[in-house]
Length: 248
Image 1 (cartoon, rainbow, N blue to C red):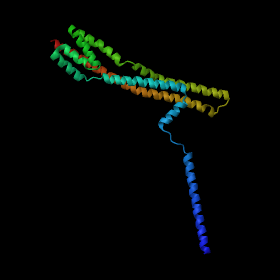
Image 2 (image 1 turned 90 degrees about the vertical axis):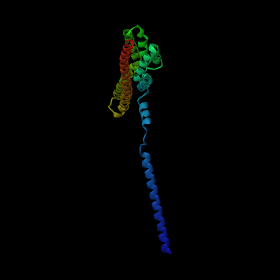
Image 3 (image 1 turned 180 degrees about the vertical axis):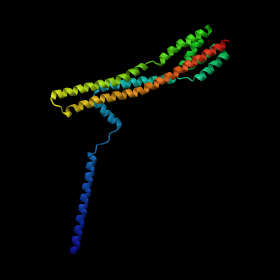
Image 4 (image 1 turned 90 degrees about the horizontal axis):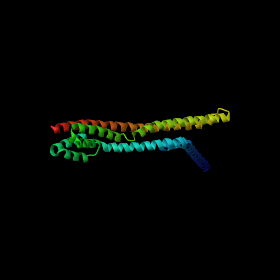
């Protein structure tokens, strides 16, 4: 009986020691998890870095991004509406000239959106004065339509150049402030200049990011304008050929 009590007591002691070890191990795991840095999302990290950069130059760089994107989106929408199926328009105008004359062809151009149809309308409107007058009208109005396509695009290029320059200016100002702190303290301590240098570099990074984003939109817009202008030129030549054959 005494031996059984000793065995039972030793069993209880073993159970208690195991429970203590499990509790301690759980506490160690919780402590290690708590000590590990929590992962931050990209958006939150970007927001934190933006705040660290300061509201001065960061706000101006952000304004460049917002204004540049607004102009870029407006131009993209306009250019998409300005895109015309020139092959179909030429076919419809040629068919209308053969069946109903110049007025019928002008009606086709009125019902078709885009700069190519507008140029066709101006050329057809001067067709009664001769092919040379129609050609001059097409060339002149083509320049007007090209100006409409390129409207406000120069502002995007301005923001592309302005954003990194503002970032570099913020970097220079931040470095000057860091050296001012060194001069005031009379000692070269990393803790004095680390914060200022980090802020200075953040302005440069955000300026370059804004410039890269706007550059992508700018290149797309320029390529879209070039494509529309090529269609305008090809269609204008075809229209003059159609008018010459119609006068015969």
